[in-house]
Image 1 (cartoon, one colour):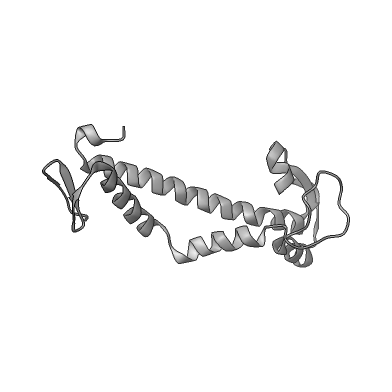
Image 2 (image 1 turned 90 degrees about the vertical axis):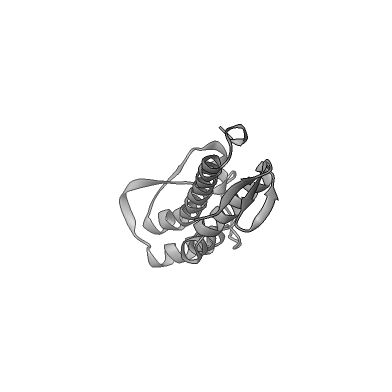
Length: 149
């Protein structure tokens, strides 16, 4: 457990002395980030976001569609080229602006477009968790007047 004490109106935290409330929050936040981020999950998120970016050139596309295609989409379409009897909703860079999904029947197209979304969901979950944990930890250890809420 982290050591926190009050010292002349300032705080002592993990060997650091005379910390103001904002400095204390910074160090609590940094500790929370250190504990939250893990190589496996976060590398997976980063890889899926990068692999889902439309960096490969394509031939012609319809007006308003995202230019290019992603490595994830090319590989998923190649290995999961299966037409389904129903439509699945997907998002691309173009459809995210309008928040209107594009519907596809090809399983490979669905998987290729979903891979970066999974990465962004993991990142969003990490950011939310870090914000919540660091704020609640900070509020638990500071004086009433220094609390964030």
